[in-house]
Image (cartoon, rainbow, N blue to C red; front, top):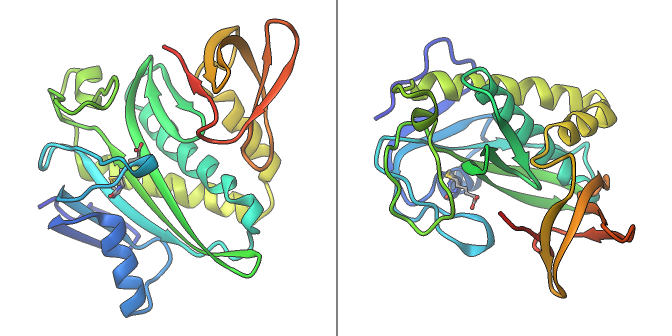
Length: 251
Ligand code: BTN
């Protein structure tokens, strides 16, 4: 089991195995009051969940698999994307300490060069028009040396730095940064966070190939709407706006 991180200032439950750290945390929240930013980590998940109903594969004990809970009642349902920005930036900027060339692939994958090192799944509960709870599940490939799953282009921190990295230390740094960005969000620094997010984006300069339902096209990223839609301007000058899943990058 992963040791409890030294000097960790968030409640943390480290389990050897569970179905999914996000499901574990959601169950806990139905059973008892759970303090904001409580963390659940697991060395192994038997039913790790990814985006779009996919599964999340990870070699036992090699990677960071964790979930944390936020109660962002100050955010309306329309502002869910702000949480993706905060958590993506926290992970990306933690990894920046270890190596260069990390970016955020819209909306919330973390890439190193053209490869994916981290995925996250944010599951929000709404009460009326506000977000009452967010369970953020985060998987960061840390020490795995070989990948066998069909996930496209995985990479681990160890493959990048060439050395074994300390899971607890990375977790601590990510959570501290989530805390800092979350406080900034609470204090109204939405635009500052949004521009930092945009500057951190994968392929945020120049023209690249994308694909939507109509086919392949060449475009550049020209913005992100506050609600998270990606704004592309294609090589004919036409502006196109996409919600998550409506467009994919080609690489
Ligand atoms: C993706 O498909 O990119 C998102 C992957 C999210 C995986 C993490 S691992 C910890 C947490 N528990 C889960 O079951 N999923 C998330």
